[in-house]
Amino acid sequence: MGASIRDHSGRAIAGIAVSLIPGEANAPTLGKLGADIRAAAQTLARRLGN
Image (cartoon, rainbow, N blue to C red; front, side, top):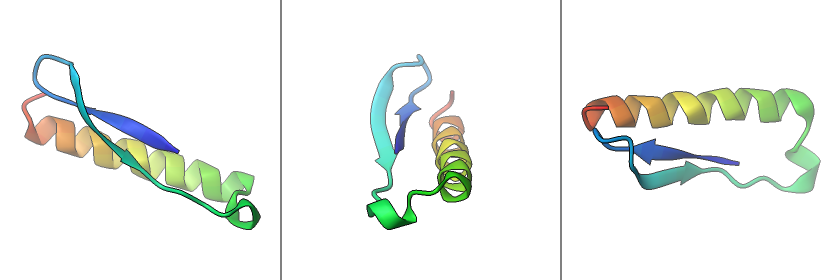
């Protein structure tokens, strides 16, 4: 699961991702990780001026 990190022009310049073993990939965990990854990517993008 991952998300792109975009620069000030909106271009994807990096990514952030997490890997899980199948036994950990349940719906609540995936939902939480998805939200956390998006938030981290948005924070980094803001720091890059996006």
